[in-house]
Length: 433
Image (cartoon, rainbow, N blue to C red; front, side, top):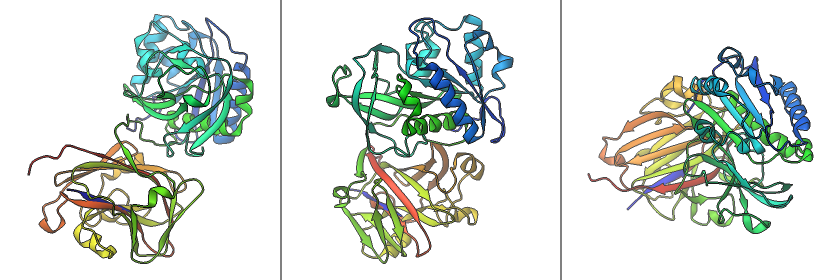
């Protein structure tokens, strides 16, 4: 029945600024409740800009929303805006800005804004409904690769004002973090409570976080890191897969217990870190999922290189304690910072190069997390990097059939250090031969 896994959409910002000339507009006009944390929020974003190389302008003047002015900015931050803050001309200008690749960051009450403007509601992802008293709650980090959440622990205990939303956005957006409704009182979303998310929206990039009600939030290093990552995504300085993700189950979730179905083939090993990642050492070997083979499926995983390192993800190989069996009878999706085209990141190793222009735009550098989706459908193998399709390959070799096999990750050699986490799979309906 199966296939084994071997562990081993980018939009250009409307302003098209170089990475050292990014500019962000913070908009905090209110036509309803006004949060007293807005000054702290503006100051925090200015500090983040100073420390991270982007310029920050702040305004509460809706007249800033003209096509000409918005072109100056790589992202617009709606900082706890409330009510109807833009007239029809401003709305049209902002819609055009997003559709030409602009970035949006919504913070907290940005979801309590423009209820009669459908475009904005889709961009924000969900509208505010109600909230209980400010209290501690447990935040569950669902995406460990997105720059806004890659530095957070799997669960994060913090105090804030926790919004309930009028609809659950999960089917439309990529959820980054959610609330454990059993950890506090007043949650009304039936146990599935997204609180931060991202999406590609009508040509632009959008990030929303429900955090940020309190003044104290903006002095919290963890929240500031979360906010910085969302801004970096929105302005195009960091790449991420922000397509909706539903129906996956974990093969490795960062816990020792989830490694029970895995086996090491060949020399070397992987070390489980406190942050829930597996890091390679020694080799050449492979950690492979022996618990099940797979036939038609989508496997996703997050990976990070320490430097100029070498690794890969293997699919479609038979069970074996010999890692060379996967090399000879399966396919490797390469991870390598530098090599020839058919042997570098995104390639089907030795068989087909990735689309290098798309790959280069989608790729985060060593030290930052990336996300692969590898989709096997019959003998067709497709690869997405941070949400961008970069390879499409069809197997014609009966000795390497993808129709039943395992998956695994490679530990390449003594000098190669690659980390993996959050390996998950969604089985697909099998197509006929």
